[in-house]
Length: 254
Length: 261
Image (cartoon, rainbow over all chains, first blue to last red; front, top):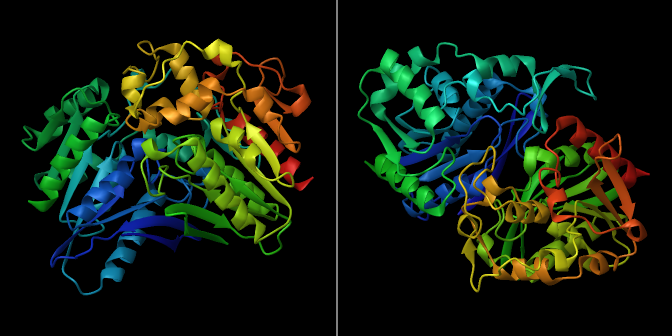
């Protein structure tokens, strides 16, 4: 069952979909998707929607929504930043908890790409039982920034605000700074990594390199890292998507 | 006021988002490029919807069958199912206003010509190539995963992709990375490769077509039916929807002006 919902967060309407299984076990897993920088609640190859369907089949509740300024939710992209996304996640998680009421639930988060940074910012603020990182990207090394992306700030035509044109969207300078620089996310996430599963496509060299560098310096030897043969950053084949889902569902059920 | 709801008809369940202003000047049906979520590339359709809504236009953003949040798989999406979905959207818009506009891009923009003559059409980069120039493409017998029809892994420089097939995907409104792991129905390819698109586009009297145009300082140009000319397949590459924030802003400006004029 897919139930659309909309809630207000900082004067913006967030639009989402709840996947609810036919039978809700007790306790019940509630999984919330935190996608990356300029994704949406469906995402490439409908990966988020299809994972919701897989969760339904496995008797888990799955929640996917658009942050303000992204997808179909209210607001413009240049009005938001990393912290507004974190606030949106908290509002949505509280909404879902409220819907389920007194039932015993286990909250799990999925951080897709740089959605890992949202999870790091959420962990001190909400109680999370476990989380999964799909292709976690903590920051973008300058050498990997697409050279075709311009580097000049311009004025957004409606508001006159100074913004960074990133492909077809305007990004605020604050958001841009956040994207290029890590805060204390590494320190925050480190103690929680035991209750996580980390998945990479093994054909995602730049992202794997950044993670391995961080891992060597901060995390030590992690045993909960899985690789999918041949897969790219976004798991752009049906087969890779299915493998990603199998690993994720097994971890969530375990 | 923004709202999302299911549209249930003909055994299909489609997702739509509506924007309802207090005073309604007109109604607009917006459909994304083929295979895309309703917000479309760089949230183009969401940006357009908000601007129209602010100008007093009721907007229905509708996801065709097998797209985005709508039920079904892309492999079951055919030309007739797309036309049916357009009609579902138009029917809803008729309950709101008699002054109705439809906007889409790529292949779905072409299919808007199946609407009644009182509907006003605006299409961005519709398919407008001479079928003889694309006659060399193979049409599979069954639905095929797009990554098998168009193999390739280099999503940055596209160095290992068949360039013509990449252009074909962009021409119909898709983005390879967004749809590479989905299946396409041969009916879609058969239509794109065999239809007389120029003739089809001219079938609707009340239509305007926007194309990227490098010769114009604005980098886009609006064409009426009698100004249409065949385009090269390669001209759709990276320009079917140009991923430049200012370009998208000004094209949206133009569409809003055409609707509230």
